[in-house]
Image (cartoon, rainbow, N blue to C red; front, top):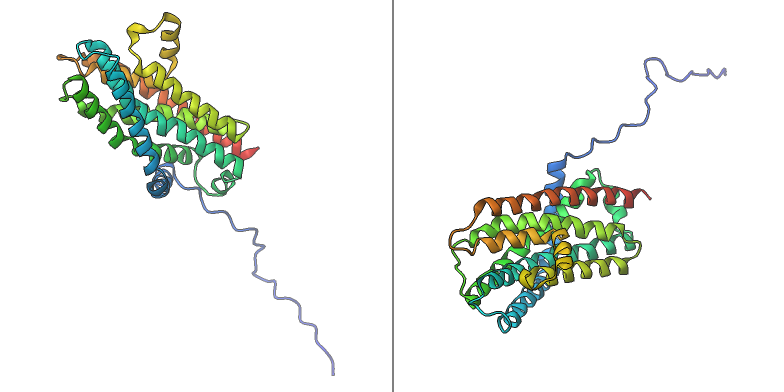
Length: 270
C-alpha cells in the first residue's frame, strides 16, 4: 500500500497575527465606574471616620465659643467657616493621602494599572467619592456653628459650591501626597500635617495671626473655600468676592488633580 502524503491545506488561509486589545475606556464612563466602586466601598469604611471628622469640628466650635464672643462678627464668621471646611480637609486631604499611600505600599496600584481606564479617571473617581461624604458633616457643622455664634443661616446653600470645589483642591493635594511619598508612613504624616494646617490656619481668626502666618495661609487651598463661605454670613454678601474665592478653589483643584494624575502614572510605571 502506498501512503499518500497530504499537504497541509494552506491555500486561502491568511497569516493571522495576535488579536488586538480592546480599546481603552473613555474618561467619563471610566470615571463613573470608579466613582461608584469607591462610593460602595466607602459606605462601610468611611462613615465612622466621617462621624469622627464632624465630631472633631463640633468640638472645635465649642472650644472656640469660649474664646470668641458672638459679638466679634468677623472672628465668629472665620471660626464657623473654618470649622465647616475642616470636615472636607479631614476626609479629602488626610484620608485620601493615607488611602493612596496604602495602595502604593501594598501593591494595590498594580490592580488599577491593569485596567483599561485612563489614569485621570482613577484619581478623579477616588477623589470625588471621598469628597461626596463630606457634605452632610459640613452642613451639620455649619448649622451648629451659626446657631452657637448667632450668625444667619440663609446662605448655607453656598456650601453646595464650596464643598466640591474645596474638596477637589484638597483631594488632589491629598492624592499627590499619598502617591509621591516614598513610604506609607510619610504619606500618613503629610496628610496629618495638611489637616493640621487647615485647622490652625482656617479656624483661627485672621485678625490674631501675624503676617508671615497669613502668607502661609494664602498658600493653603482650603483658605479660599473658608473665605468664600465666611463672606456669606454678612447681611449683604459681596458675591463678587465669593465668586472670586470659589474660582481660585476651582483653579487650584484643576492643578492639584492634574499633579495627582501625573503622580499616579509615575507610581504605576516605576
